[in-house]
Image 1 (cartoon, rainbow, N blue to C red):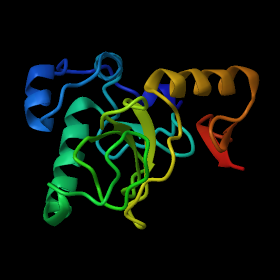
Image 2: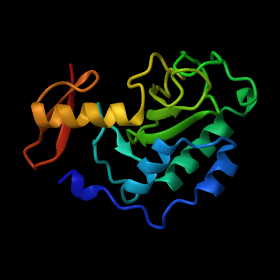
Image 3: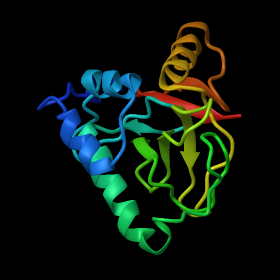
Image 4: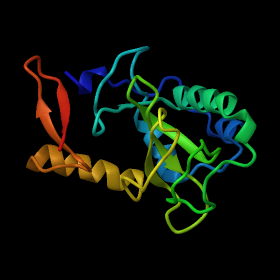
Length: 174
C-alpha cells in the first residue's frame, strides 16, 4: 500500500530551472532521486523514509524551500549555522534542500553546504528550528539503509520497520 502512493515524476524535473531557483548546483544523486520519485498526490502521506517521512517531488521541494525562505527571511543571508555540511544549525540554511516531509513541517533535507559531508541527509526539526548531526552521509546511504532494514528487519537510523493492519509501512522509533 505504501509504495502505491508514490508517483513517477510528472512532468520530469527541469534541473536548470531548479538550480536557478535554489541558487545552487544540484548533485547527481539528488537529480537521480527526483528523476525516480515524484512524491505523492497532495496531502497523501507515505512513510517511506524513517521515522515518518514522505518523499517530495522536485516541485514540492522547491515550494517547501520557498516557504522556508519567507519564514527565515531575516536570517536567510546569514543563517545561524556552521559553514560546513553536516554541522548543526539553529535557523534554516539556504543550502538545505528538502526531500521529504512528515506532514507537520519537519523534513529530511540534503545539506549542500561545502565540505566532506556535502550531500548528507539531515533532519530539520521545525518546532526547535534546528538540525543536529547527519542522519545519513548521502541519499544513497539513506536508501541503502532503508532497503537493508526492509529486507533484513533491522533498524534504519533510529527506527524499525513494521507493517500496519491495513498493509502500510510504519516506522517505530526505538
